Length: 452
Image (tube, rainbow, N blue to C red; front, side, top):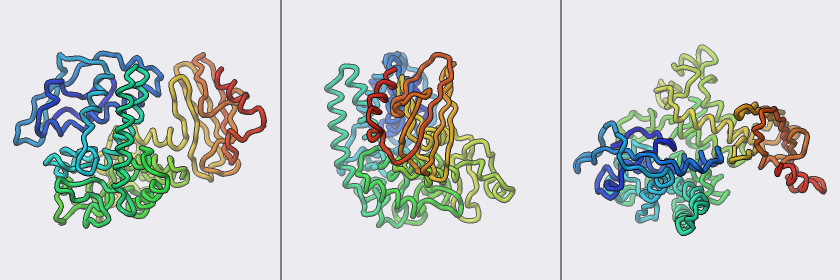
């Protein structure tokens, strides 16, 4: 990477000054990953806090020398630029820079997308990324309403139009059993069922689900392929891709320098594995989502001496990767990986337990194992506490039959946040009945309760 680590926060957006945006060469391609993540983070923060004022905060850009024409990367300390812009402008520039399109109508890979190790797939500027297409689709769909709310209707419409176009082109990335990972510069498919190595990649499948860009039947089949090829119960790991790159003719990048089954080259990359958990829950598979979550949980990898001997790492932090090949299968790589820890937290709290904040409201839509009879969440917001109980008398994975807030019928999709310093009790009952099918008058009660 040419510019700083892949850490993006609303108060420190990663972006180049305007005078460097149009430079040709590796630097221009190399920082594309960073800027694509910025609006995604901001969209999540805006929803959680319900405070769009953060979009108007002025923050500096980051500045660093442009790469030399013959250089592919550089390790440097970026410095704050004298040029500033609002957080919204940072996000818009990131999206605009990412609106590229190759021969197959997908975003350009550049010198790598999420996976730095695929740094030679698009080194000539023509390679494309299916995963980036799904990710960009989700960013455009989420950010368009933000633009509209700020009075920029033209930009919102353009983003929605581009999202529609992307969705159409992504459909052509279906390879028969799963989605391609992308295309090399010469048009050769990456992650194809016809590939000798790197035949299937998990993040193209998980984000096909998480983005909402594909039909449910294709989403299910994509996850079926993950189950069949990437969930390794022997080593208790969820692989990033399979089979690993080794001696094949394709040269995807430095990923091939890792031994097969190590790190991104066919091992478990926990950041991506958490997305598989979330995708499974999104499809309503509570039993599987919980199984995979427990599979990734380092506590479970150290419960016995034998497990600890295999895992060889701390039980209280997340490992960035877990080996999956040879005598070291199941062994942790480097640990204290905060990126994967954040996604694991979201997978457990949001995807499985179903708690999501939406500004001044929150929703509870669990996707839990069918054998759980109940579970609970104790959630504190400032000085206010919500004691949330989820009961599952019919042993379902998903589906809310009824909800009460402080013994009054409530809409679990829009529970009001009352920052009054008190303790509120929310009871969620899972079952077959949909909210709209409750007894006469229930809809009116739900409406009144959610408006309080």
